[in-house]
Length: 129
Image 1: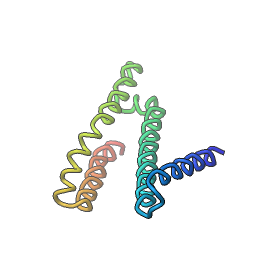
Image 2: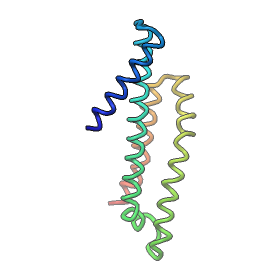
Image 3: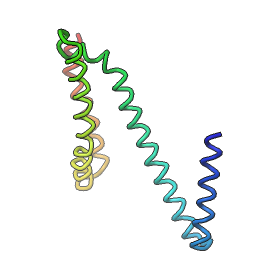
């Protein structure tokens, strides 16, 4: 039912938008491009929100594994602090890696970032054994 309401509202907005600009192919292309951007932005936000919610729900299980077990509250707060720092560091990483991606290419930058994320998991894996 919700999808029908969203579809009807997009269709209504499209009719108003095209009415004001005229029914040209350029106006329809602009609207379709704007719709793609809006959908992509909302999907990206929803994936980020899922990541945040998954970490918050897993925090009570993660906290005693990495922080002192003497004080459960302190270890939980430290775990949530790590999440907050990571959340605020994302824009800085986007600025840095976006600039590098513009200079040397996005494929190379994507590979370097993925390789780096995989590389930092190696010490944790070795400690788990």
